[in-house]
Amino acid sequence: MKDDFYSLLHITRKCFVLFLDICFSDKDYENAIKYYTEALDLNPSNAIYYSNRSLAYLRTECYGYALADATKALEIDKNYIKGYYRRATSNMALGKFKAALKDYETVVRVRPNDKDARMKYQECNKIVKQKAFERAIASDETKKSVVDSLDIENMTIEDDYVGPKLEDGKVTLKFMKDMMEWFKDQKKLHRKCAYQILVQVKDVLSKLPSLVEITLKETEKITICGDTHGQYYDLLNIFKLNGLPSETNPYLFNGDFVDRGSFSVEVILTLFSFKLLYPDNFHLLRGNHETDNMNQMYGFEGEVKAKYTAQMFQLFSEVFQWLPLAQCINNKVLVMHGGLFSEDGHHQCPMCDLLWSDPQPQNGRSISKRGVSCQFGPDVTERFLEQNKLDYVVRSHEVKADGYEVTHSGKCITVFSAPNYCDQMGNKGAYIHLRGSDLKPEFHQFTAVPHPNVKPMAYANTLMQLGMM
Image (tube, rainbow, N blue to C red):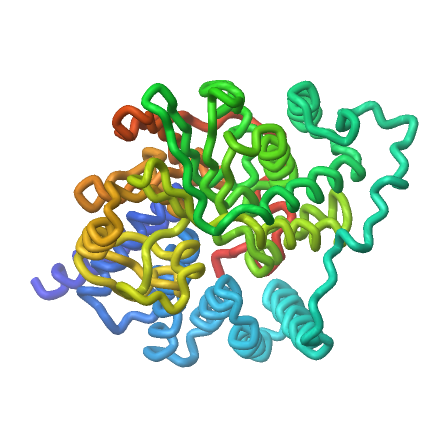
């Protein structure tokens, strides 16, 4: 009887492990997290379960939780080498390069013949040295703009270039249509045109406040889109479904235009150009991926350098710093990329929270699953709205299976516009219509469209190519 019991227990465990393997192979990371959590409730001293849940958290970009699980795995078993690997990956994702380097050193010391581990150690070591060099040469002098070193007027457009050009240095509707088709065919805009767009959009954005306020008349509507993350062909699909931007068809794109997807250059140049064409009817807000650290890790920097130059990436970086952080519609709806603040009233780091925070179902605030900013509950949302006489907030920043999610009793709405995110999540995309007459959100869903055979993260730092180790 006792032997039968232990045989049954062994079979059950094997089936459970097999089921979790299926969750990973199907990229069903949410269920993997759920069932590893249940397993840990039954066996809280299993380092492997913590390490594997850490990987699932990494896949869902919950880097704070991933770091905590990897650390817990090592507390249970300091010799569990995968724990060091996962903790290093978590710290890399959070920009904590020195901490990551220490763990990569441990992996390489224990596994000197592991080529992948050695490559990651060398790459991380290079980043640490680069950051140290940047700090060493930094000065208190005002940093010169890349614009000051450009001579755009004397840049030559070669005779064999037959692509779109700005007309008398200006973006026109014809230029927009020609450029979008040019990009669709995987052709590169001439660098002179790209520089012209960047310099002009920097000038436009630099005149905007951090909080942009707009008013919709009763007969007007605006379309709010969430993260697009370099998924250019899905961006074109939005315009196909919802119409091109115009003075009578305004848009608001809510940050995270770049990184992850490998057509980020095409996405951002299209969005910036529409901003130039319709400055009062096409709105852009900054996301947490419009920052240097994220661009270095998740592909945009590498993509710009591959398609253009390091100098152009520096100019993109400058332009991103001028993007507004929030937008208020009719004094009733507040839109930001991340969410609300780490504390009521006086805010210590409002920009970080606006770009990074997430809602949670329970009241109060808690440590962020991402390891940055916080998570805020329905009571926090309710107080903020009452204090500021707002109806609700719209934010993005999180993949949602349906492309959107309504939480906090309808007071907090998430919209995400990158369907089948990274070619693996299987989610729908969505956008929202808001009409001036009632400001009631109308949700429109769409699915991913085919794109050329260029994988997501093709230009990302090799350290972010997460393996199963």
